View 1 (cartoon, rainbow, N blue to C red):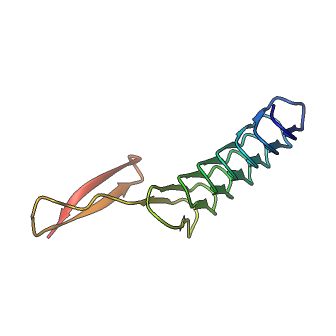
View 2 (cartoon, rainbow, N blue to C red; view 1 turned 30 degrees about the vertical axis):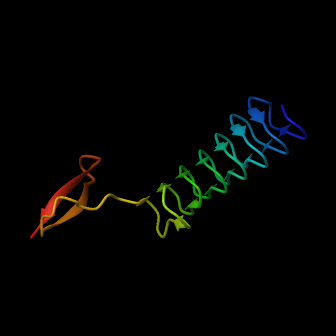
Length: 134
């Protein structure tokens, strides 16, 4: 649906937007020039692009280049497999290595304390947590 929108594969795609494109199956694409290049991609937003299987790109000019990678927010680039990039700040934020998480910005302490907090992750229990550093 949309001017020049295309859907390939066996057409199990949902495509809408000017020149939006989903050449393989099982993809969701919404937005001006949005594109999911491989199966299972989700591209939502102007110029949002997924290049590998199961990529997710949400926002304006967002790219998900790795397998199972997620990019959210203007200027986000998930360049590596199994990465998550969330950018709510100005400018570009992109992944540097596989199996990683990138978030910008992260709120600073505003309580006047002199200590520093550290954001930590335990791979045995997949959640992030904050701990004080003295």
